[in-house]
Image 1: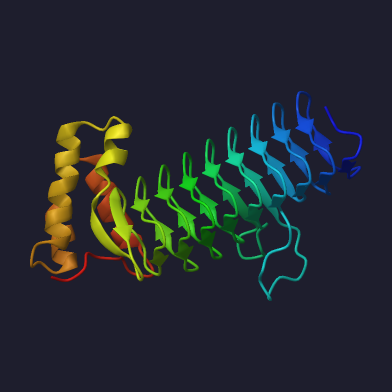
Image 2 (image 1 turned 45 degrees about the horizontal axis):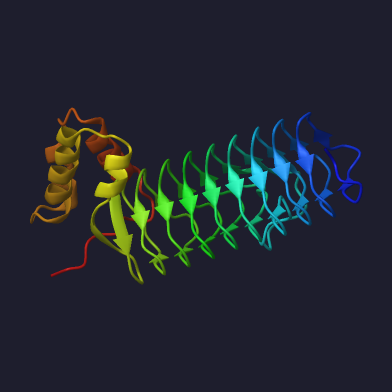
Length: 256
């Protein structure tokens, strides 16, 4: 159902069983897939919105990025199936650097969140009220970012990490941990998140042991990683691979 006051670009594709609310603008190069509901007074352009998504009032999806180097390149936003975008979210399309801003499936972007150009957000990610991600940020599957967080450009946040409200992130956050503060430091494991994902207690103990070796022993980081190389745990391998691939460096616990 398309409300009579909605404005739809002639090149947009609106699949059956989608709903477009009053005074919404659907711009060029846009696909709205089946079962998706767009509430009133939203603006969407240069975007592909997956099946069974819901985008609430006054959201802006696919507008040009806040990047002075952008010169009108044809880029887009991709939003995965089942994702919810709440009121007043801004979600910019990519630049020539990557071409796309990508949101995974079953994510929740709470009101007033901002996702800048070329970000990659994994599946099942929650981003809280008024949290802002600068360009080229990567947030891996099932991470949770609380309210009023700022994330520096090019930072990466690992799988199932939990970031406390009001934090400022300027270094990479390894998987499966909690982090908080300005600038954010590690505060232990995200045990609640791990248990909610039904990760076995034996695997959680492997992650806990790896955390201690990496951040609580007196080993240099490269030596701590070497000690963990033979671990058979896929979760420990996630952590060591993340650290080895980090470009900005990783956040660590506060020194005692």
